[in-house]
Structure formats: structure tokens, C-alpha cells
Image (cartoon, rainbow, N blue to C red; front, top):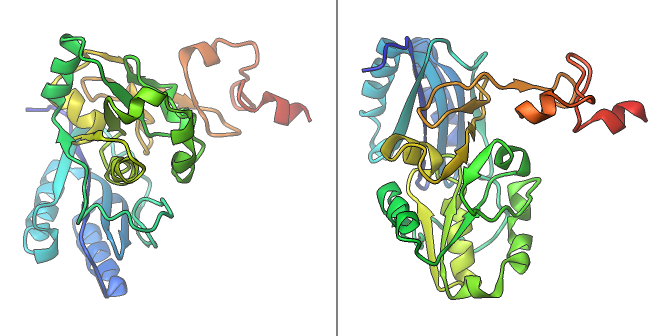
Length: 277
């Protein structure tokens, strides 16, 4: 059992929703009543959750969630910290819970099969011939990724559809495992690859966080970027002490912080040229 005081929840569910304004009011009221902070995205296609609160407050919130029929089956990953890594509570209405802008991609009706963390580890252990594809943005990938993972060098997820042209030709025949932080991007990226003719596409169930919790650090190099004040967590799911650039808000690796171009509270190697100009 964790000795940390606060529970952090992350998860999503693809489910057809209507009356979004009423849903927003309901969720915001439940979270505020239980002193929860974080962000919930609500869209016609479903819900995406990143929340934090005191352990007993989170338990009360989850009890309330259990009474909402359309949240049945919602899988939430838990990590722990000694502070709440969010400043406020927000519920936002969106067109998509993960912006992709591709028609015909429906995770509810045509998902790609999942691969469990333990099975992925086995593939690595057995030197299986497969491709592992990081679907996250470039600033996330530099913090850590799986061994031999292909990095599409994304600035935004909407650009993912353009990256398949850069994949090696054998990718269309070999098993391809997509992964991201918690799994939500792969719910769209993996079906898109299937649609484009890739024959053996899988998505890592629960993403990197689930892999950390089920397997640990084996075959993963570095830490994992997260979208809250922790910035990154280690394979044992603890904050790694990472800092952001004061100017461009880029997460900074140890190497970047040691660079002559890193000026605390001014700039970093990622934005030094913009400052100079």
C-alpha cells in the first residue's frame, strides 16, 4: 500500500454520449464536492480523465462514478504522489477526446487487438521480430521510450497519419505494437494502421503506465512524461523531479539542463534561438 497521501487517476472510455452540457455539470459537481482537481474531457465519442485528490476523496468519487451507467467498464490507472499535481478542476467539452481528424476510425466498433504488458516483455525477451511504434509527441519521447521504438517525431497527434510513409516497408507484414502514455492515442492510431493495410497491428493495453505497473522498467529506457505538474514519472511511478523551461515550457532532460544554452528562468536549448532573435 502506498504511503503517499494523494491518488492520481487516469483513464478513458469510448462511449457514445449526448447531452454533453448536462454531463459536464454532473462531473464538475461530483469532483468539486469531493475536492478533486484535474481535467476531464467530454466529447460525443467518450470521456478522458486525469484527476487527483486525497485518497479518501478519490474513493468517494469512484463510488459516485459507479452509479453512472455509461461509466460502467471505465478502467482507471492509479499512481500516487505526496501532492496534487493540478491547480484546478476543469471539465471541457471537445469534438474528440483525442484529436485525430480521421473519418471512419471508431475505437468502439473496430478496435485493434490489445497486447498485455507481460506479453510485450516476452516478445522482447525472446527477440521476436516486431516493430514497436511510439505514437506520442517528440517532447514526450525524449524523456523515455521502449528499446528500439520507432519515433515518428510528432509535433501533434494529428500528424500521425503522415508518418506511415516513413515506416520501413516490412512494417506492413511484421507485427506492429503501438503505444502511448495511457493507451488513448493507440485506440485511434492502431485502427488507422489497420485501415491503411498493416496486417498485424496491436496496441499496448493501458500504455506505458500499465507496463510500468505490471512489468517495471525492463526494455524501457528512461522515464515517462505525464501531463501534470509531476512532468514525468519513473518506472516505479514516482515523480522524477523534472523541470520545465521557464519560457517555452519544454520538459528538460539532464543533458539539456547541463547545456551552456540553459538559463534558469530565461531559456533553454529548445528556445535559445527564438530568444536571440
